[in-house]
Length: 239
Image 1 (cartoon, rainbow, N blue to C red):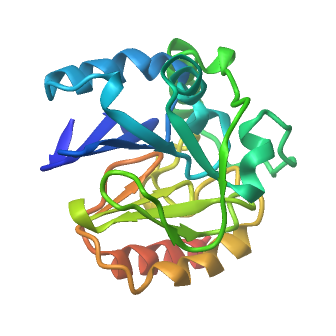
Image 2 (cartoon, rainbow, N blue to C red; image 1 turned 90 degrees about the horizontal axis):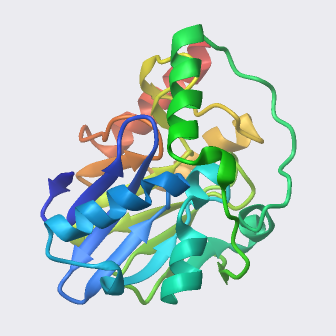
C-alpha cells in the first residue's frame, strides 16, 4: 500500500512493516510476521522491484511480530538486518522480561491472535546474525534513515526518521490501535517493559518534522508528531 511517493506499508492495522523506496534501492523498517513474506513480494512486484533491491532491514525492536521475515532475507538474500545493541539478544530469540498483561476484549484479542497465526506467528525464525547499532546515527541505506533511540517498550527500541519520504517509524513506542482491546487512537502500546520510560522517551520525537508517523500496530498518523505525542501522554494520564 502506497502512503506517499517512495513510502509503502506492508500489512495492515494489526501488524505492519514499511518500505522506503528510492532509485538506489529499498530499505525496510521492521519485518512483521513470517507469513507477510508474500505481502512483501507482492508489494515489490507492484513497483517493478524485487527482493534483490532490498539493501537493509531496520528493526525498531526485537519482538517476534517485528522480526518476521528478516532472517529469511538475511539468510537467503544476504540482506543486513540492523537492530539496537540493547535488543540484539531479543532479536536472536532470547526471552524478554515478563510484562503485565494489558486490558483485553475478546474479539480484538482473538483477531490479533488469529491474524498472527495465519501469518506464521507461531513459527518465527529469530535472527542468527545482526548489525548492532547504538546512539543516534544515520545509516548508509536508501533514504538515509536516522535512528533515534527510544528505550521503554524494550531497552533497544528505536524510532527511524526518513526525511526523504517525510516519515517517522515508531515501532511500538506508541500505537494507534491497541491489539488486545481494539481501541483506536493515539495511546501507549501494550506489552511494554517500562511504561514510564517509554513515555519519557517520546520527548526525543517532539522536534522531528514528519508528515507521517507510522506505528507497528494501528493506522498511519498524519496529524503531526507533536500532537501525536501530546495525545499519547494525555491518554496515559487518563488511564
